[in-house]
Image 1 (cartoon, rainbow, N blue to C red):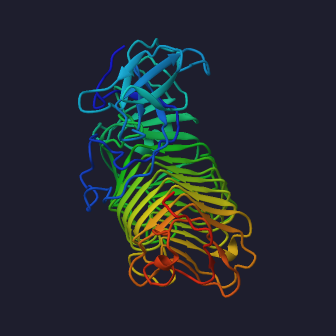
Image 2: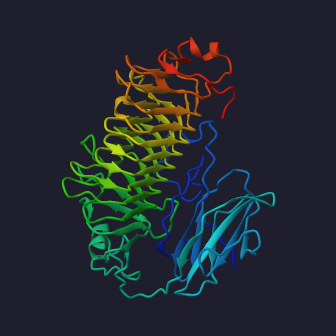
Length: 498
């Protein structure tokens, strides 16, 4: 078994699709974009949330590559375990096939060169700090494939510098994404080699397909998609029939959508175009305009949309993520959203969703807006710093339309700081609402604004059991920039940070 450095380029063909958790710098040194976020260090002095530890297993030619994201800065090494049967690895008694580390700190990938072709393997990665195991990622699997120069309609290659007339094989790739999507089998994978893709038209997807980088999985590749020449249309649109599709590990720049709802990456378009279980994973969107990623239904609805591990930065015009209509049981997790003109996440008419472990920084509008028709959701583990910087009086880091929330709306474990109104409820009557705000750190609201404000004339906002920066009520009750409004029940507040 050999431990390889993470920068080693490998031809990758299929991916076990699992979510990774964001950390203060999930991008490592694996090829930053030509446009890094203009504020430099994305951590801005705020401790990152503890990251959920999840790994990837990526099929190679003929090797299998494992990737993961550092779950904690204290990690010094990792154990890698392997089996040919699922569910039988025991990290307490089994012997690892490798211990992964390097001189300056932990490595984040492992290449299993001993994997036999056409055999499926199961892996578990265990994180250690000073020799003691502190975290274990869920089991993952992959199969080593045989590389041939023949056309494989399940795995189609794209190279923007290739000549016309390609057939999609690894030796003779297509030169446009649209050609690959058209040629690949339903359920197949379109692999984008590094290079600059200047789109002439929107890429539309109407079957199940994985579109991803050929040289990276959870990290962003140097496959850069420039949509600046196609005008008012999405770079990539997932339409009816594209259920289960995945977009992963790519960079998007230059896109302009004049619509307030429809994004650079768009899921759904009009009646009958309501795909389910689409995943937008680990992409980098930078210097785009209006909306970054949208789930947009004019009627009907889509279930199971997952938007996770993306970095959306330097975004002008409107929102980073816009949920327009009809999302059911979706998840927005582990994204970093920074330097955005309007809202980080703007949601309407969505139910049963979770928003978890995202980081929002320097957002002109609301960090997240949970608007009309949103219900039965959980917002947890997010970090919001310097949001609503435009100082909208009825805005905030987290803004609620309380009258919409007739079933459970839980806001817990978040850190909201330095925002103009850290949390703001804007509806006039919330007497029938079911909102719980608990176990959050809500501190240091911007001058002239509120820690929590409830604009309702009827109904009290339940915000018991939160940390407001002091154990003393006088410190957070009476002064603007640190005040809790009168019609907020903040009783039993925490006396120390959770």
